[in-house]
Length: 498
Image (cartoon, rainbow, N blue to C red; front, top):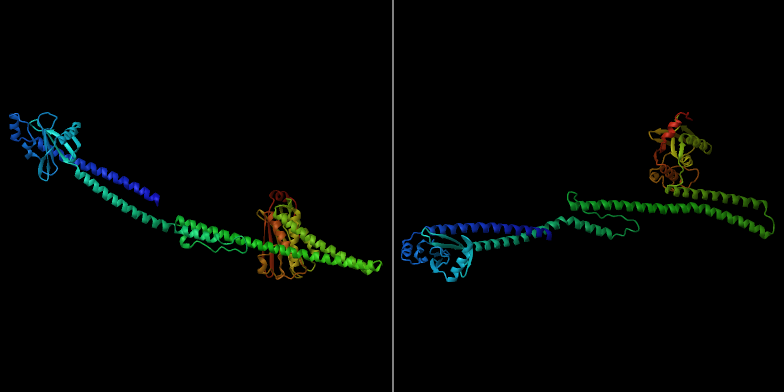
């Protein structure tokens, strides 16, 4: 507001000065024309009394030719004989009557006219006059002038009008500017209020949802301030989604810790129980002072076997967790040329003995499909997918492993005609410790890390995995980048099918 009012005030002042100067110049020019016109009338005087005065050597005076003075108040007239620079007499018309000029006033007039034909002279008791000097046809020097009071009064009135109009205009401008700015900045106040409410929310703990938004009316993208509101809404949407993702990650981490604790607790409890059983058997034998009986030895041996089995189970779980952690860090993969066709053949060959009650099919192309990756980890992908299909399908299910090439990607598919995946658990299928108990019949238990490991390995190879499931048809599809150079070299060697 201060800047706008300041600039407008400066502009109005400049306009007022230019207008006053222009008007003053115009009025001065008009006054000069009147003075020169009066001088022209006086210069042509041929009054006989002036002529008689010259004949008898009498100095002509202003009252001898007063009839030739133009009418009107404020008209000044002075006369001097010959080329004498001293003006002996003069009159001024005031209220319709003439009054003689004093010697001081005459000296001021004479002094002011030394600089030229036209001059502005301040005369005591009369004010500012515009004077002109000339000669009559008889060689008499005459001076005439008009007061500048009217010009000064006109300019004073003009300045007064301009000042009042400027002041009123500035007041109106200030009010209009204040209203305009207040209305224009209303979206910013809404933005500030929304930001304040969001800042007062506890965002550092618990479940967080940011529902505050700048009202749609204040977030109109067609205005600059509306763009600020729209930008804040976009930011709040992003923060809200980020906080939701953080909350989900925290919940997933809590579930992960709980599931890992549960999985580790079971083998640890078994190890502890069987250890205590073995110690009790040995303690009883020592108390009896006899050697352990064959039954006690058998019981101790069985307990040690169970301890070993649970230890191995716990070791596998810890190794799987360690593998996932290393894959998350981008480690654990040793890249080389991998033949997916060979992996598929070996995977099915290993899976057949583990589930003879399932039907196993293998579909591979004549040419080998090679990719860049870690052979051991990709073999683990095939093994886990086949084990998942075997574990969660009933006897008699047909499981098909196929390999194909699609442009720059090698495709690995595991298909079964089992009951399918429950849609309720499909979104969490690749989560760690995810279980599909509610959707598939299981013969043995697992840790729920198999598919999570598969996903981590595939993504570590810059590939992707997807699942498509419905009753009677479930397909896991793995896409991996193809090693073009190895594919071109392997195209000369025969492929294998089964």
